[in-house]
Length: 449
Image 1 (cartoon, rainbow, N blue to C red):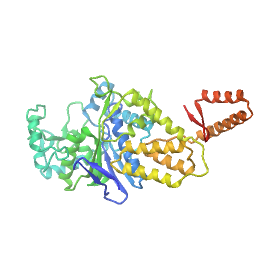
Image 2: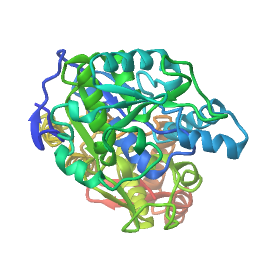
Image 3: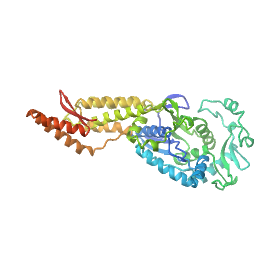
Image 4: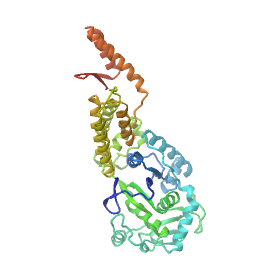
């Protein structure tokens, strides 16, 4: 049985879906004003891996991940790039799909965009106004946090604590708010900005409202899992809960999942430190499969440290698994031992998707394969387990593998005929092609260097 660490309860909970063998999952996506950075990629890959594991366990996953395509940063980028906000968003949505495709991330069931949900957002806000959870102020609409019971519960914060922390806050909106913690549902348009007509005048949605609207529209009033980076716990997810549950009267999400941060050389990534790394640039020098392996095989809740050594190690480890995948078949293997590997993998991953322990099982399986335990059944299991982490090896290499096996046979025959010059030539030719021969007690085996 799959168990999930739920941020709301701060506990490990058995997963009980709303519908049997179906998962309704919403993951907060990027604001598309630039290429995604390694932190965005960590979240995207982590929850793609979790989605893949659910599918491995027989679940159908309705996976929604949004694009924020209306935002101050997008408007600013449009001015700098001399593009409309929509053109900016279109450009970087295409870049997101290209870059995450190289990381073997599956497309979401649906990638909703804010611009396509403006009427739904206006209707949602109207209900909050009618219920007294929101108020209008000079063309803006704000959410009244004091009316919502247990505001801040996701972040394990009380309203009193939050109010104390915000008491000294000063901004352009402060004079319009009843409480400094109140947040914008609708922002009145500034001159020259993109806007839509509404009952409160021309404007655009606030940030938090979009995910509440798109989640409830596409997945229903209550979903199984809502997920995103740890930085979204407050205020974004906190505000989503307040506005969604105020409107529907239902629990917004049954499980809340948050992935850990990415550090670069043991320092928090930031533009000011000069260690801000975009995936687009990284993929110019790092193979996407290697980067995926690095991101996917560590526990999603733990912080990870991005270093050159970590990428090098991921490359080496991936080659080891690929070599195991490329081994020649034996006639029979111990099926019970194979099933033990599957059981160990499931036990590891059922425990809050513990990727670190799951990949350890896969390496043990690879070691067993390299000891001569490989046939089609083993290959199928090996492939299925690797696929959970988004790791795929090309079966077209089997043609090359057959040629390698033929050369090895020729080398063996040459050695039996004491034609060591030919045997050495074949060994050296294979070495130049990146093929290393290993003479073992069970015969000659080979790996890719």
